[in-house]
Length: 240
Image (cartoon, rainbow, N blue to C red):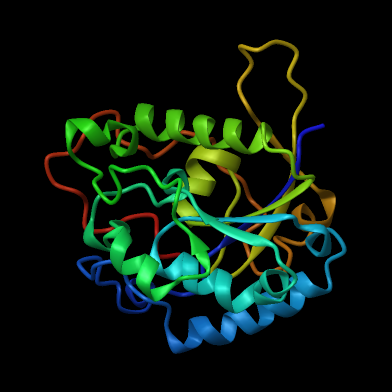
């Protein structure tokens, strides 16, 4: 039986606060740390989160920091936290481009980077086409990421990721900073079926686990560029 997924958006990053998308791999802010307290409390009270058996995080600083501040109680129980480049944000702007793995591993030794894609943090070269900022590549990356989770042995998996990727490529749902949603995999009748998620009523009806996100949904794949833009737009869907 495929796992239940708890998808979490990172707490407020410095780029969210300042609207400066040229900041490389930004940290979470002081407000972001306070948001993690609310997220932590919400997850600790959630009976499904209590059963989580592994934590998957985007290798970006803000997602790792959010994970360490909100699910530390699971890590203390022995739940492993693993970095997966598939869950990084969409664009190739500095704020959405990661730091070298050696630097991350030294700063966050509790995180397992051993299976991280060796092209990380490259998002623009031909070798890194899996992470290119186009509709086709982003949707393919989402399907590949869901397939990996679908095939994992754990019954409940926490994923810490990013708003635009999770909304526009994975779920169609809005995620405000440090909010979460719970999903099950939809039925697949053949090996060629797409991987799709169905949200639990508990987080759908109130707008996220903490009730702070929009209830409206968007069409998966919408607002993504068909081709690599020569220059990325000033406003990106990462700063809601």
